Image 1 (cartoon, helix red, strand yellow):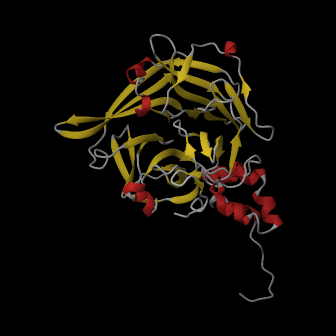
Image 2 (cartoon, rainbow, N blue to C red):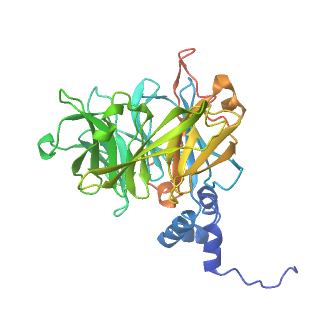
Image 3 (spheres, helix red, strand yellow):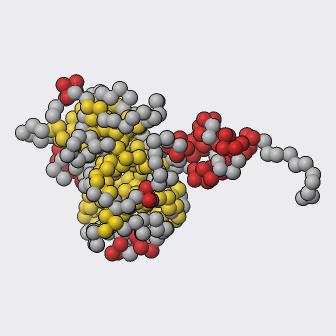
Amino acid sequence: MERGKIKESLPTDLIREIFARLPSKSVARFRTLSKQWASMLRSSEFTKLFLSRSSTRPRILFAVERYGLNEWQFFSTPQNRYEKSAHLVFHSKFSGDVSKYSCSYASGLIYFPAVQIIDTNTILICNPITGMYVGLPEVMLYSRSKGFLGFDPIDKQFKALDNQSILTLGSGELKWRRKDRNDIDGPLYYRCQRTQGICINGVLYYLSRTCSEETLSLIVCFDVSSEEFKFIESECLDDHIEDPSGLSLVNYMGKLAVTKCNYVDVGGRRTVELCLWVLEDVEKQEWVKYVYTLPENEVLGSCEFSVAGVTARGDIVLCMKYTCKPYYVFYFNPEKKTLQSVEIQGFGAKLEEVDNRGEVYAFVDYVEDLSLNDAKQFKSSISHIKSRCYCCETLCPDNVGEEV
C-alpha cells in the first residue's frame, strides 16, 4: 500500500458487525481509542446488536471456590457438546469468606448473600466477567442475609430478595423495602439451606419447607416485576426435603424443573439415574416425573458431580463438582438418550492439585451483555478486595490479584 493515497474507511455497519463478535472486555478497550468509537460502542443500538450476536454463542460460566481458602475465581468456556475438549477463559477473582448459602445467579450477575471482608459481612453482587461489584446494605441489623437475585426481562431490572425484603438494583439509592407479611397469601415457610434459586422469565423460584408440624416441601415463586408471591405445593419432593442438597432447580425449556441424580447398580455396574420433575402446569400445580438411566461412562460413574442446568436445546448439563485434571462436562440428551463428554482445560495448576482443588458452581446459557458492564452503581474490580488471612490474622492483599 502506498502512502499518501486517500483510503476509503470501512462502512459503519461493517465496523459494528466486527465489534459485535468480540468479547465484551475487548469492546471496553476499544471504547478508549477514540471519541467516535466510544460513542458508537456505547450506543443502545450497538448494545442490542452485541447482545443479539452474543446470544448465538452461549457459554458455561464457572464460579470456583478454592477449597478451604475462601477464594473465588470466575471462568467461562464455549457451550458446545460436539467438541471433545474446550479451553477456559479466566475473568476475575476475589478473596472473602462466603456464607453457607453460597451464591445465586441471574442473567449474568452473581449474588453472594454474605461475604466476610476484613471484619465486616457484606452482601455482594458482582459481574464475574469484568470483576465490577456493588455491596448492598444489611437487610436487618444482626441478621444474616440468605437471599437470591432475580431479573425482570421486560423492564430489564434486577431485584434482590431476602425473605420478604426487596431491593431494586438501579440508579437510585440502594435500600431494602419490607413487604408486609399480611399481604402475602400463603403458609409460613423457611428456605432450605444448601439449595440455589433460579429465575425463569421474570419469576424467581426457590425451595422451602412449611413451618407446620408436618413438614412439607414448597416452591416459593416471586414475580420480580409485580413483587407478588405465589406458592407451589411439591409433594413429589417430600421424600428429599430432609436432605435437599442433591436437588437442583433448572430451567427446562422455559418451565421450572427439579433434578436429582442417584448412583444405581445395574447388572453389577455402577450407573447414574437421573430423576427429573417438570412443572407442566403452574396454575394446576401439575408435576410430571421422568427417570433416565444415563449411558455408562467410567468418569461419570466414579466422580462427584452436579446438574448445572439445561441448555436452550434441551441438553441436561452435568459438571464435576471439584476441579481436577482431567475435568469433564457432560451433556445428556433426554430424547436421544445420548451422553457426550467434553474435557475442560485451563483451571490452572493450582486448582488442579488435589490439595488446592476448588468446588465448582456452573451456570449454562451464559450470554455477555454490555449493559451489565456499564451499570453505574458497580464499583471497582473485586480483585482489589482485601480479606483477613486466617493463617496469620493479618490483611493479606498480595495474592488477591494473582493470575492463573
